[in-house]
Length: 154
Image (cartoon, rainbow, N blue to C red; front, side):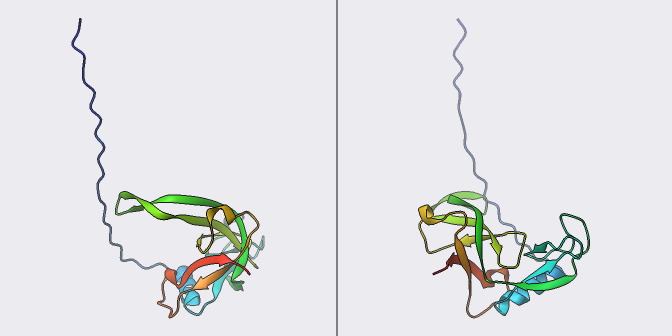
């Protein structure tokens, strides 16, 4: 009878630390400056009228250049969502103390949803169709973090 082979399973985690320093481009730069003024800017397609936030240069539907800028409302509707129980930081998976609520939100005046965090509610209260509003940091820091999160309206 052949010797029984022992099977060893090894789990390895490799911490990753990437520092980036790059230009975001004129569209996202204008979007970020708008957030600093507590405004959410979007671009509108001249052909199919899609309104995208964050703004994009080309329409994902008809590939036309989106050079018309519009301001969309700070309120919107949850289209879809997920509840996260872990985070990945520098390549390591860590449990969260409380669940993170991430939602696809179509803002008033927009047709393309924005991915954002929703705070101030239990995961069981987050639902499709829920009205939410933007919460901005004060003072603004001219970064994407100026749009802190969304919370339930009312």
